[in-house]
Amino acid sequence: MLPADLVIENASELLTIRGASSRPKTGKSMSSLGIIRDGAVAVSSGKISWVGASDRLRGSVRVGPRTKVIDASGRVVMPGLIDCHTHLVFAGSREREWLDRLSGRRSRGATGILSTVSATRRASDSELTKLALANLGSMLSSGTTTAEAKSGYGLSIRDELRILGILGRLGAMQPVEIVPTFLGAHAVPGEFDGSASYTRFVIDDMLPRVVRQGIAKYCDVFCERGAFTADESLDILRACKAEGLKPRIHTDEFSDIGGTDVANKVHAASADHLDAITQDGVRNIKAAGSIAVLMPGVPFFLCSDAYADARGLIDAGIPVALATDFNPGTCPCLSLQFIVSLACIKLGMSPAEALSAVTINAAHAIGMADTIGSIEAGKQADIVIMDVGDHRLVPYGIARNSVRTVIKRGRIVVQG
Ligand code: NIG
Ligand code: FE
Image 1: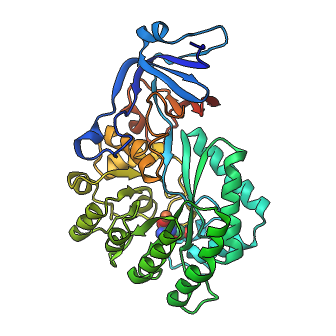
Image 2: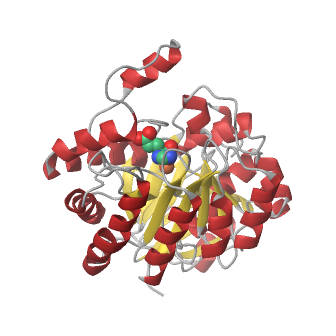
Image 3: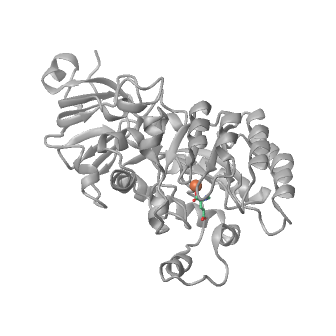
């Protein structure tokens, strides 16, 4: 037996979140975190090689002179957090729009997604990369080790390909692993006279280029009044799916225009937002087998009381994941720890449910539950050590960064 590269021992709570790699957690199982008290983990060649009680570690794993030993006494050890819905690459910011909203003023001048599209189109590759790297650094230091990231602020062939290309390169430039999603149908750019003609352009002209370059794993559509209709969303997701991209959908963020039915028809990997979901919508998501990705940072930032019915979704047996939706217009938050707090306070989720939702269920939402999302032998060693001794203190410490150490693929990448 070769000595382990790294061992973490004496964790007050080791949250394994085990047993849900083949199917996401639903219902009551979202409340069980597979906690080992006084737990230990061993890591070899970037993977978890052993998990158990600290007093069994040295009898089961070889700890040699070159093994890095971390004493996690009084600390929670858990899987790296997974942000399964972000809009990572863009330029500019939209604080003016937000300040106007706060003071009840009507915004003048450029606002909304298209104003970010203009800023993004003007920015060079290196500017966009630099901005994204800074945001990834902040994500990583708050415990995010994997993030889904969408295009969608380019909306031209050149700029959508540019953003997806940048997303592809970012993975090799810093530790956060990135799962790229093609969101050409985020808004209708000014060059088009309506969503119908732009929908044809996305399907006939943009999609083939994205597919040819192999730069996206998922496709997404913003199905909403003022963006894309249910029929257009269905056409786009069907076309993308036929080309091998897995569908997901922004739906019922502000209104129900039939997006959950689209999710059902394409068996979307995830249905995201759902703040305005109806009973029929819940039935559609259940039938679709999609993960419900809830993002309470959005209504929070928009000063709205319309939060998703997380309890109704969980009671219906639908697996729930949580994400930031990091973007400049509706949620500029990079911290999943804060989203976990909001899920407890605003969605009525328990700390354990919310932590399941940012680990194993988020891994399922991005098709990676076989490699990440839990601390189990054989999985990639993506591990976070929290500076608190009880997992419930993570959401309790609202807006506090409880992260002490972040380990990505067995390597210490943040040391508090
Ligand atoms: O997920 N809903 C669409 N897209 C983003 C908002 C993007 C923006 O306002 O720039 C969202 O909320
Ligand atoms: Fe979004």
